[in-house]
Amino acid sequence: MLLLKHRIFLTGIGVIIFLISYSVGASIQLDQTSAQRLKEAFLHKINGLNYVGIFTNNFIITMIMFLPGIGALFGIFSGYSTGTIFSAITYDSASHNYISPLVILLTPFGMMEVFCYGLAISRSFILLFSLIKKENLAKQLKSILIEIGIILVILFLAAIIEWHFISTYSTRSQISTP
Image (cartoon, rainbow, N blue to C red):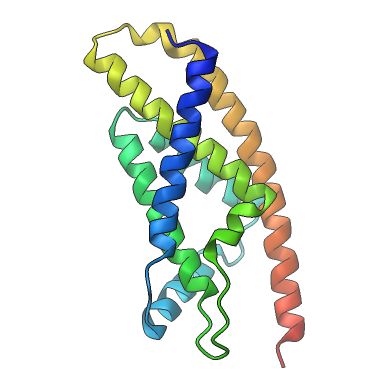
């Protein structure tokens, strides 16, 4: 059984892993066509989405990240994919303005989600090493259920904030469009 300080340290490592994979995805140079396709696909996916849909999507992704070993790989892929999508969203070939896709991580909901993803990625490694050492996973069940509860609350609050952000931003975008 890991001590709380070890779990916190490993969560930090999980956050760093997610941020690195997100940054790699965000650094991908997209051509205008690819950026537009990704942007349209993303906007189509979130069209009509409310905070419940955002929460459900993020919670499912996070729960997959808990799977021993493979969940960490999924978390890395998820970070990379998300970075690439936000790179496409911030791509503006007409004005040649560049907004870093990393800016989204400075939002309250971005920080909350990254924390949850880092926690889940770290738990994936913990569970993998517990299986390799043939430890009894039932001993970790209480800690994992508490952590899932924490994630549930944080992601729900993050979804409400994100939905408000999206609603506000899309309303302003529609107003400023001629």
